[in-house]
Image (cartoon, rainbow, N blue to C red; front, side):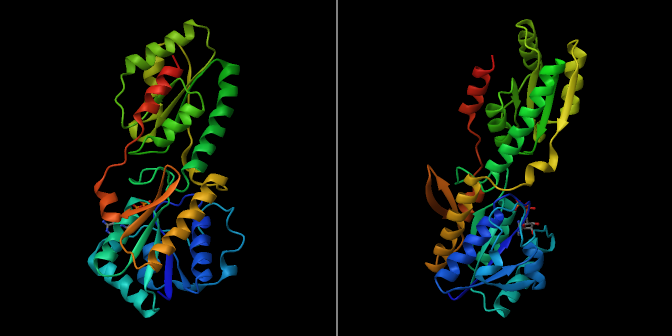
Length: 319
Ligand code: ADP
């Protein structure tokens, strides 16, 4: 392979830049030309493609977001859109691409590979919801942003004797809520993968109150429901004041942590190695700190599982 491309797609995540840098530098190290495809699949279809040099990815390892920009494209979900993309790639003489993104982006990469164009996927999403890898690029940074927020909210919660409900990202995956709740010492964690009973949440609050706790922190993943509604239900059952904090998009931004930069560098470089070895339709990941690769279709046919033993631990530690 003499020419490869790289794009970032779907929801951006901190560390995507470090992955782009790794792809570019690793390819050039092996005398392969690299092309940046801007704005994800949208730019792929419209030919927003530019050759990248060593210096093109200088000074980006520490920056959040993605210098290649990202996009969501409905047109690319059609066969016509996918063929348009492949036409552009052929025009530039590109023989394979690295797709950095979440499961939606992986579906696009799977389709391109099925049409005969080699792709390798790199997991870039804060949600940590891609099967086959223990961690996705951006999860650790998002987690640290949430913990920073929880710590700050804890200070004011203690001062005013209040119950805080903190809503974090995760429509289908509870990883951010679970890890951040455990690391932040939350009394209660609500995730989409585990049923909960409001009566239990309330009796846990009551027990804490009786023991003289001055505050309580409840971390809820957005997929569970509205934090505002949960707050109202608590207020109507108990004579306590609640406050709600919806962290929103701050969880997506910021300088990537050392963990995410290292993960992105390792995975980005491995993706190039796979293309060089003529492998296609593969996704890279990390399992027990070892780099692995597996079929994108296989990954997409599986469901990401949250570690429920950690959920159990969180309830045991916050009795
Ligand atoms: P993420 O990659 O973060 O999960 P999305 O789900 O928005 O983000 O997917 C990113 C893009 O991938 C979509 O806008 C679309 O262009 C492409 N994509 C998603 N699903 C498919 C599909 N089934 N076939 C082809 N392309 C898809």
